[in-house]
Image (cartoon, rainbow, N blue to C red):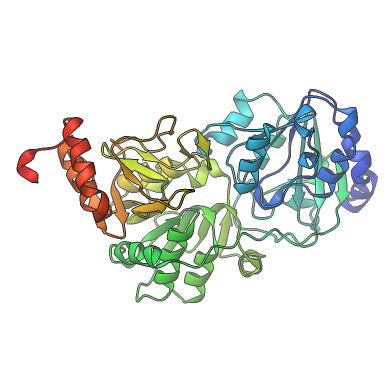
Amino acid sequence: MSFAAEYSKKLVSADEAVKVIQSGDWVDYGWCVGTVDALDKALARRTDELKDVNLRGGVLCRPLAVMEREDAGEHFTWNSWHMSGIERKYIAKGCAFYAPIRYSELPRYCREVSTPSNVVMFQVAPMDEHGYFNFGPNASHLAALCERARTIIVEVNENMPRCLGGFENGIHISKVDFVVEGENPGIAELGAAAPSEVDKAVAKLIVEQIPNGACLQLGIGGMPNAVGSMIAESDLKDLGVHTEMYVDAFVDIAKAGKITGAYKNVDRYRQAYAFAAGTKKLYDYINDNPELLSAPVDYTNDIRVISSLDNFISINNAVDIDLFGQVGAETSGIKHISGAGGQLDFVLGAYLSKGGKSFICLSSTYKDREGNLQSRIMPTLNTGSVVTDTRCNVHNVVTEYGMVNLKGLSSWQRAEALISIAHPDFRDELIKQAEKMKIWRRSNR
């Protein structure tokens, strides 16, 4: 049978495909911009028929149809590997929960440990002449999911970019049970806010630390994007990319001629990433671009791979940090914000890299709901806050007031260093609290 004939044989409507889902099933919904669309709407139409269906995915860029009803939680539970703003709203509704894991471990977890998916479904690019559907910018862990699934459904989207150059970045028609031709929605866009003056101040401090030929990883958020924009305008050259998430800033850096990958120890001349999300500018750039390398997250986030790349520069955001040097990047107290992702992997890998540096960046303050200024550098993390990077692993910390290297410092040195980059309005109180915590030396006032 030809690939085209097999495709035709497996082609069904979205409503027909989701009939395989039963009450009590675990259903994987894809990842980020590859989350199903037509299949989601079809499953929503079956809501009254189903109970206790567990859905898995993460980094949602669009609201889910199955979560629109007020009683959605009686039928579906959303289990997220990394939460976006949309998913935080589902937590408030009581129908979504975070699944803590180092993102790099996810493919192995899918293969060996997790409850096997009864159904796996995700958006793909159209089938090529060899019978393969490309995962688009979502290699991540999808291949691993498919290995143990009872049923695999692909939703074809003609707008999905084909992301090449790596491995485990697609699936063959022979392994697919059903093909659904979706409504071809535009790929969800995840734009970054314009950088603030604080973002620019932090970015300037970091860019000064980046040498020519460095290999870059940028996290999600305004500050990493501000760093990327500043790099694009700098005199840096021959940079490489090896990152978890590919963002718009990398496109700007590449188009400015700063990326060659000439000094990468592995994947020379290639930009490696596990998933991508951004604006149309990014999707156009990654489509059929042989310079890019789409790979599973257990490769991109492997500490051994990261550390093998000389002059590795890792740049990530944090919610807050305490005077012990514990970094919280997932929650604020018990309020969930995102997830562990690959931050710790890159913090560890960058430090092990020859010439490598890890940067945790954050604004020194934020305004609470009442409009009051609060410090992100705290005596201790708020009750319930999750520690993303333990104090012994943190390297450089940056605010708009400066940069400090915490690696190897004793408790009083850490407190002194962090207070030196706190907002001036909070420094005296932080010193008082450090004294109470017995991590302050009077000689250092």
